[in-house]
Length: 330
Picture 1 (cartoon, rainbow, N blue to C red):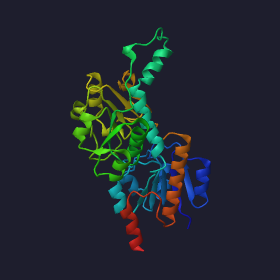
Picture 2 (tube, helix red, strand yellow; picture 1 turned 135 degrees about the vertical axis):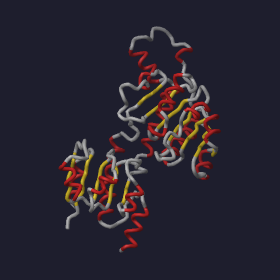
Picture 3 (cartoon, one colour; picture 1 turned 60 degrees about the vertical axis):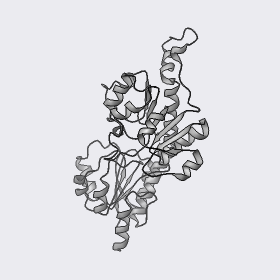
């Protein structure tokens, strides 16, 4: 029997062709509504799902009784009920590693752009307001030699810290659930409590996954602990930060600036003041958005679903317990 896959998001013909050589593929290029009758029919027969940015609920899983594996084209998996998937024996795969360096580039871009006020001053030139040598009112601040506080020190957090420590001579502090002795030796990084990190850092960068524990991890209290000269960068997920508290901190001068690639609501609401604030650099969630990286992410997802549906261990597996259940059952 040929197994069936439901694919959505923007897969390229080469990736669809790879899947079609082994499986029957129902492809939904611009899926907007999970109640779409054609999607529901395909889901009812699906053994695998490939895609990203779709909220997978237990109700949706009920509509897919034959489902064996999901390959998400993302590193984050907050759109998936991991425990529910594990209980049902459904493998969940993601795409770490392949987007680490690109996302870290974006994180450090936000550090540089906010510190040197690059977007604000580029607009200053575009408006024709540059009529004389700039003065202190347009000065930025140095990045080299400053203290970088990383909240979360996984692959992406470590890659951002590596750029700061090795490229810019920054002192690195990190707040993390577990110590990272190898990174401490490599980067001269120091592990500390969140409160100390917030108080000492010139740049505070968030790179934790979104979970119940990290939702609104950074709020009014945390911004109040930062230096008035501090710059805040979020490269994680929007809901890690209490956005109303961030706006207040920026308006009240509790922190100097913010570089943001993620927001509580995406796309960003037209009513949000954030993109209109001169001390904010706001990007449309471009962390991994390069041709090379998105290609690699999609290829990883294709490889993951192929291995999973052939009974093999995927390259990037989120819920190891589901795979162990499968192997012990056989």
